[in-house]
Length: 128
Picture: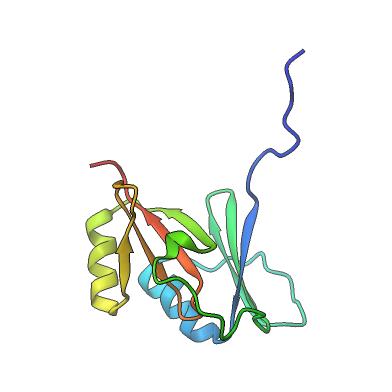
């Protein structure tokens, strides 16, 4: 009898943010994510983004890590990893927005940057 895994897939990732408009400029303006209409009316501000069958939830809540020094390279920190369809367009958008980033230390086509609240984001390009 084949083993059925207990966990089937990643459903969503939640990130804490302090300034929703600044976060939206990053996630929508730079990364071109589209807001989801599925977010219920919670007692705190936020926004959801659909990424295929998965989601990113931005929640405007106090960040327990605020003031904590984060590693310069996001690969050595908690991070969300997103697959990128157009590598050159992504790099141009990061440069145009003045968003610092570091290359993956594995040698693959990936960079790490941070959103306006310091959440680390890995952006993985298609194989060359």
